[in-house]
Length: 387
Image 1 (cartoon, rainbow, N blue to C red):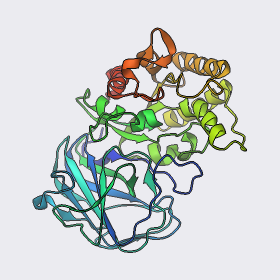
Image 2: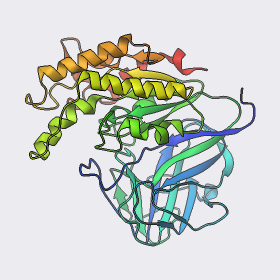
Image 3: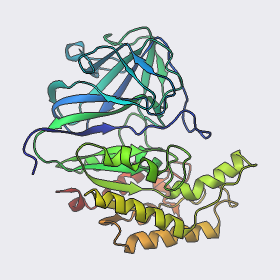
């Protein structure tokens, strides 16, 4: 049992490369601009440290100044809480291509629900930015060094992605279960209300009384194939196994392995985009579950949700539906995982199990709205998330 204070993940935002052929988000670069981006802590502690990422950058990333404060208003901060961030004692730092870096600790009492603002000044051209696909939280960019400004009046709103900011760690006493929500858009939050914190981890956190869940979902991510972000088997070390304090992982994968080939066929008609077989998906799940459990994590797998109507009938075939059902039947019965959440059953329309229940549909027939994500979170057995 851990009795001394130790670092755990307090917030995560999985990142992707700006150089991928298929992009679901805005590829940007910045020069002599301050980015102010916001996040909400699901749990508190006695200190935090901010994580920045140049994981997919091809040029050194120069940070001229950075600051942390509590949010106050649209793009403002409480100046009384504002502190400069340092990195091994330095106010300026350069991240090499591929490098991630944590700031020095900022000691204070941070409670669950605290909204933090991270402001970073990039004095030189960043090159295309390592970023998250879907922030669901508006950030802001303003020319010059405005890291210590109370507000960023006149700043450009960054409505889609989160740039360079990959996480915050929290210093906590004793043992806490920390779960990683690892998967695709159903984890990241596509379809939920921006700024409302109604993603799956957020809604599950409202049910928890001990520990919390951090979000490592990537919209468009696949189990077996690199497309939007590295595929799950490739990124699992960075995005789960290396997450400090992780004790549990919730898996929601496979949907894009079935759906995205049809999207790619439409956008890139001269390319070949094969669909995985049920055997291939089961093999990927088996390898992933084995690696996670070998690392001592409790693994909770989700069944693959319905998606009829999201793609046209050329791509929503009887063969693909049969694949989804075969994989789901295997997930429900296998001992590869410690537990299963039957998301497909929780959110499908009883009148047509191939479709999302209309009351839960975000409107695109592929993603859940706030109510649908609440049903998904309510389906999780909380007993599996306690040490």
